[in-house]
Image 1 (cartoon, rainbow, N blue to C red):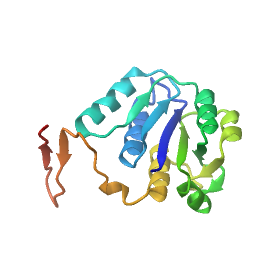
Image 2 (cartoon, helix red, strand yellow):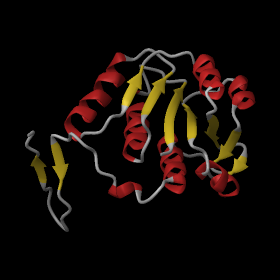
Image 3 (cartoon, helix red, strand yellow):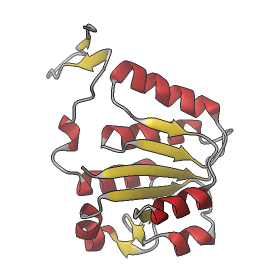
Amino acid sequence: MKRIVLLRLGHRPERDKRITTHVGLTARMLGAEGMLLASDDPGIVQSLEDVVQRWGGDFYIKNNVSFKQEIRKWKEEDGKVCHLSMYGVNLPDVTCELKNCDKLMIIVGAEKVPPEVYQLADWNVAVGSQPHSEVAAVAITMDRIAEGEPLEKEFPGAELSIVPAERGKHVIENTKE
């Protein structure tokens, strides 16, 4: 089974709470096993842990990590690193290679990404050639490299589930047995 982890760089707690939360939610929904936050923001951790508690799955969040140490450790354990940006090779040109990775770290920045990230990454990938959101970059990339249909993934242990319906909101509470 493919292992994917997201590394979030440059999170500014006073500005980026919502977007970083959405990056984590998107990665979780599309199959990442966890998120590494290269900043100290316990509020983000709490928000994402609350979602995991209510909506299921085994997604983890590690707060205040050293991005250099996490990247080096990942690579020492035979993982590959994909840095998403507007600069680099085009996503369609490396999609097959990314799909074939058994262990992939996806890096997405908020503010200016340190030059070391470009050097440490196995791929610097342009997700489009226009300014865009980190959430969009993560969503497009993870959807393209997914095994199976990521939008049909089930999350074990969910307290809540959405029942698809043409109109209205249908949320059910799951019983624990």
